Length: 222
Image 1: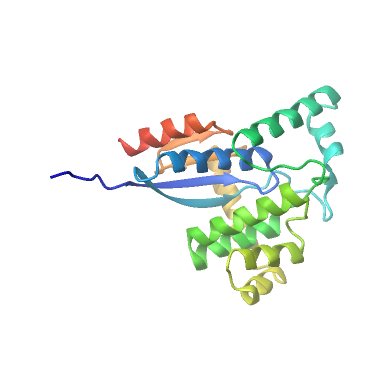
Image 2: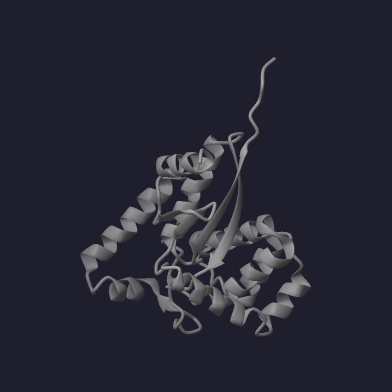
């Protein structure tokens, strides 16, 4: 009689920011890896707030100015980074449209909603909201913290719009986001993306599909 092995349950904690392109690219690679391992691993994903630009003003900053500033005023490096992001995004089927993405934004309110989604509706709803926010920013160039975009993403994720609006119009979740950010720093996480599998396997950066497959297999066989 043939015996079937049950899929191994894995917890994957993702530390990311909505406007981080390597977070979106890495998540695309992770999804492909999980698809390859379908039936072998059963992953539950949790998202953790990390602001790359906590001091970014409302309205954000022009992307070209931002890259010029953070890349030590190096125009050649700025172009190379954009080309590399677009190339890696294409490999994992993640659409990043730099014809539309013109600005970098403050993401604090989006992180407040993501924490709310995870706490009240669970990890699947939180992931659906994260994906919607990624898409709005990287595909449409939208401000991921404008109330209109946030509520549209909430609807796409199947979440309660009245509860979401109450959060957007208040300070609910402010302390939680700040505490989460502080806790991550204390854990040694100072850049994103970061991936923690089953609370023990730590990975950093936008890994390839093959690297994720290996890491997931390693975690599943412990």
